[in-house]
Structure formats: structure tokens, C-alpha cells
Amino acid sequence: MLRPYPLAALLLWSVFTVVKVGADSRHRGYVEAVTRIVTKAVLHPYPVPVPFPYPIRRTVHLPHTVLIRQPYPIPYKVPVIKTIPKIIHIPRIYEVPKPYSVPHLVPVPVAVPIYEDDPYPVYRHVPIPVTKPVPVPYKVPVPVPVPVPKHIRVPHPVEVRVEVPVFKEVLVKKPVVVQQPILAREYDQYRGGFPAFGHGW
Image 1 (cartoon, one colour):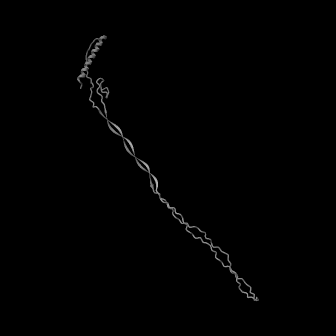
Image 2: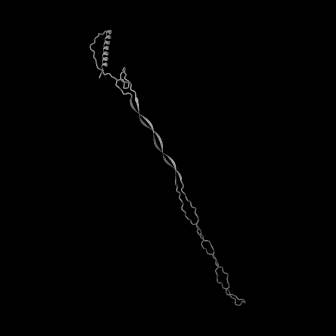
């Protein structure tokens, strides 16, 4: 809906324009003639109320902590099993000499002549010295157990590194909604239109 004030101002402006054109034409040799004045309704912008201030949402990143696991080595004791060697009895080898023949004397009958005419008695059998076989002693080896040293391995703890998770704090940006006001300018009656929306309004 058009207001009466803009229409009246438009009519006055058109009349002054026609009169000015006629005045200029007199000096230039033209005949002053006004045939018709046409009025036309033209849309004229007028200010519209705009809420002030206008709220706008804006995201702001705020850091927060996040736990991240990180392994690190921790020593701990691990039992070590030692092997015990088996005891084996090894008999010693002794050489046993074999019995060998030993020469010895053997009594042999010997013919002895007998003299009957001799003044002294003669024995028919004269003893002949004979050697007896004597046994030769020799040593026979006997296996003797020999002590063997035992090697016993005893388990003892050994330190071994083990990875254990560690919690580490890491800052992660988190969006947060923050309200930010926007200033709206007033209507410019001389230039026309709203500067925020352009000059065509």
C-alpha cells in the first residue's frame, strides 16, 4: 500500500520538471506547449523493522583431554630353568694279561750203572735234582668306580622388559556454540535502501 506523502511529492516533482522544460524552451526558440501530464504510481521502498541485535551462532573450538594408551617397558622377573646333567658311571678298562707258559724242569728217569764189585754200596737210584714248577703271580685288574662330578643347574630370576600401556593426555579441539550479536544499520532516507541488504531495496 502506497502512502499519500510520496505520491504528492512525485506529482510536484513532475510539474516542476515540465515548467522548467518550458522555460528553457523559450530561450531556445521553442514554443511553450504542454499537452498532457501523466502520473504513474511507482513503488517506493520504506524501512522495515529489523530485530536488533540479530543473534548468530558461531562455533568456537575448546580443547579437552583424551586418554591415549602408550606402551613402555617395565622389567619383571622370569624364572629360568636349568637342566641337570644325568650321571653316568663309566667303568675304567684294565688290561688283563693272559697266562703264558713258563719253562720248568721235569723229572726224567736216568739209567745208572750198578757196579757189584765196588767196596761201597751203590744205590740203584741216584736222586736227580728236579725243579718244581712255581706259579708266577700276576695282577688281574678289577673295575673300580670313578666319581664323576655333578653339574646341577639351579633356576634364578632374570629381569626381562615387558611393555605396559601408559595413559597420555592429548588436547583435542571440541566445537562449542557461542552466540555473537550482529549490528543492523538504520534506513538511509537520502541514499535509499538498507546498506546491509544493498541499495536496491
